Length: 180
Image 1 (cartoon, rainbow, N blue to C red):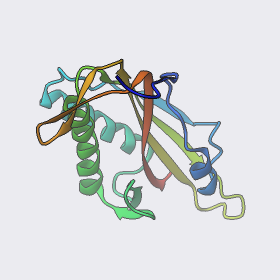
Image 2 (image 1 turned 45 degrees about the vertical axis):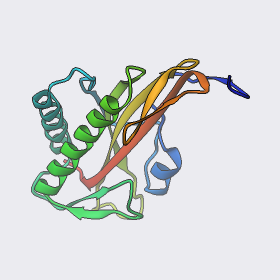
Image 3 (image 1 turned 45 degrees about the horizontal axis):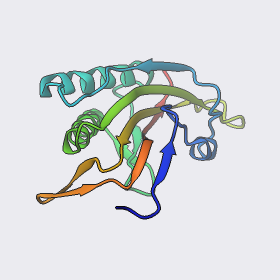
């Protein structure tokens, strides 16, 4: 029925954007801390999604002082944006709600396999008074599509997959601020 079917197999693991971290003065292979969070599933209640977002915000402000100015790197922006507590909380809540919507918008083949926060120290060898921290919030989603399995395209349209196997995607949200 389909021409050129392929089998795609990827490992379910989070990938780091090493080039981005190195450009921002971080050694990506040496995280200072790491924390895993509950996975968001299709069956997760909206209050649980908000609870997960609240846990992430609490963990972030454990490593970055809440009252000091910090910056967020949004995926659709080209540079760091200044942020305050309210903006950071709203951004994390939107991230969790978007992941929840993304998982629910497709059929049962899409699921979250990892949700992790990693903390890196920014290394500035020439300026000893400036000590910064970068927080990397990673979300991993996998899609298992088989031959002829349908998925929802939106606006009442369904399509059938031409690829078999497992495909994974890692998303990143970065927050930079003073070190605690």
